[in-house]
Image (tube, rainbow, N blue to C red):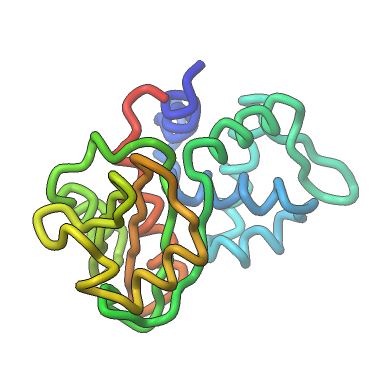
Length: 207
């Protein structure tokens, strides 16, 4: 199953019972954390900033989907989970915190690099709106094309227009032709991170 459908299916309502109180981006973040090391439920709840009940439901759905297994040492990705996470990481290649620059909008700023998706970007409004819905203050979308980093509809050459941002992003993310960079800004790191993921998710079709 394609990664987008696989992850979105985890949020589907299951009768009987209420809809899950966690988002798609909590699922993605949970997989990212568990991919790094084994996590217990309480620690995972803390890292995701959601309640223990929601975390229990999230893990239950991950287990039912065959993506996660649990043991006395905590939660680990299964072989299927590792395969899905590798696929995710091949699309969303890097995610980093960035210092304030000419393109940031708040105290906390997270940038994500999306592989070979520049042709899907128009003026970045769709990405900005998706970030704002999750609680971010805003988002800026950049495309690397013809050897230049651009902000569609705003700047044809970020190196000249926003030199500090250009230096930071090129050093941290190392984009290649047709890659996209999205910077989401918020007053809390978690909201900036989820804003970046939400904005990036708009570039997926049925990957």
